[in-house]
Amino acid sequence: MSDIKVETNGASGVENAITPADLEDIYGVIIAADKDVNAERFNGLPVIEVPVKEAIHHPVDLINKVIGGQASRRQGISSSPESPEKYAQESFGRQVYKHLMSGVSNMLPFVVAGGF
Image 1 (spheres, helix red, strand yellow):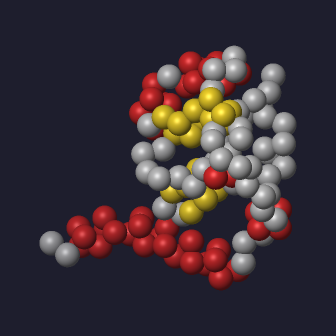
Image 2 (tube, helix red, strand yellow):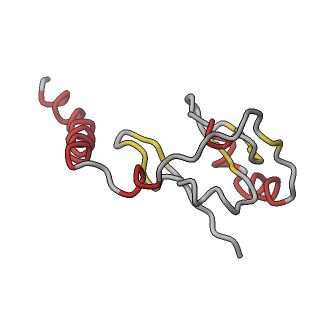
């Protein structure tokens, strides 16, 4: 059984980032997004791009397509791998910023409700 790694990109930023080392020995990539995603790092790899709704309702079908070789190779020159150190440790300032911003996002409903 193979591992599946899910990178998320939400209000608190990128979590569980896919590193260049993760991309060395893979079947393919499924990008489930309703917004623009920088997918250059997947150039030359088998990629399926779908809306989030499709990934939620048909995850097994998408995984089977990738494993079965039905994903088309993403066009473009393979981008140079980024430094693994970039993914290893975020700066303290960045961590504080992310936590503050996610805290503000969680507080907004209370602030709005408190204003009435």
